[in-house]
Length: 440
Image 1 (cartoon, rainbow, N blue to C red):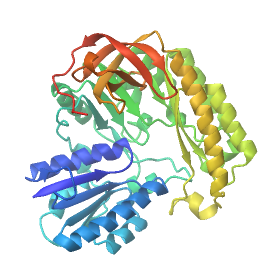
Image 2: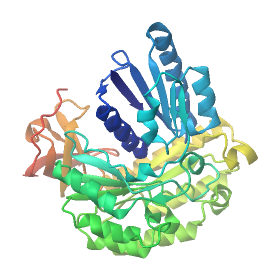
Image 3: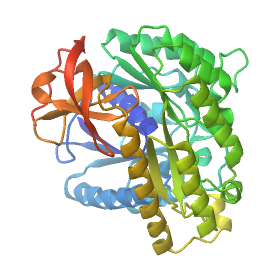
Image 4: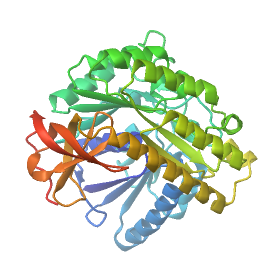
């Protein structure tokens, strides 16, 4: 039997897809690269914004036609599967297996018989599951906490993934040790709110303590995503400063620069508090690379509110930013209680914010020209003749392909910058991995 997995959404979904892929292999399934080759297609979904939901709807329509033609087995998992919206799609398009984000370990049971199988429970054994290392990978994700206790009015995640539950530190360290032995040189610790780690479990280490523990395991690079500003405490900043393996890339979503909008979002902090955290990061980690998430056009956002977001961007001077138009999601308080803004208003504001981001990213990237950085080269770039990787600040870096013939860690001198890319030349290597790069 052959299976194909299609993944939408965040790094948590990528990790979950790897988890179920390992389950399928253990059951004797062969993983294939296309729908046409597969007997079972499993779609891992995102429900945070409307665009990926529409992509899933379109995909399920195509899979239903394939099922009618040759008896394909269809599975749906992830955040959308946990919602009424996704379950209605599942009924409409003949989904056979439906698993919520907390029920992934039910996949073997789901595939035992030929009857429809749905499971939306949150299972404790998911926290104990340690998937095998991804084959041939130099980078890997490790989930340290699932769920979220914050209740932002625009966000469906607390509904789809449940409350925060931390994994036992012994399991986390065991999984990372397995990855290290498999040749992984970069680990990203994952959670909807990683810096809440341990708060739900008396006796567990804090997130800062966990960072120190992981940083001493011999993995060259350790990153983490995502943080909430109210939980990004001084002890975390100090742990990063005192642990060389922890990269200085910090992603701290702000969402808006307006206190009025932050209040409507139920973000639990205000502009001054956020900027105080940024100030402490700059003080203790002056070389930190900062990125953020910003939602444009949240219901009720005025031009004055948006100007406050632009001014905050200038005050922080972010290196990178992920910017989104507000997307109404059924089941959220904002969808129920707030009236959406006209799309043309949201699009126009997003374009202005993008221009601001380009200006600051170019300015920040120029500061790296002439410096030598450690780059994890991973594969062939879209640009002909180059391979691409990223440095410890998460900047995409391109180097001539002949200078880095195998994936691995290289010392690269940055020669040129654009708003989105750094270009460099290899000046030294650190244990490049003997894995052939794919043919372009």
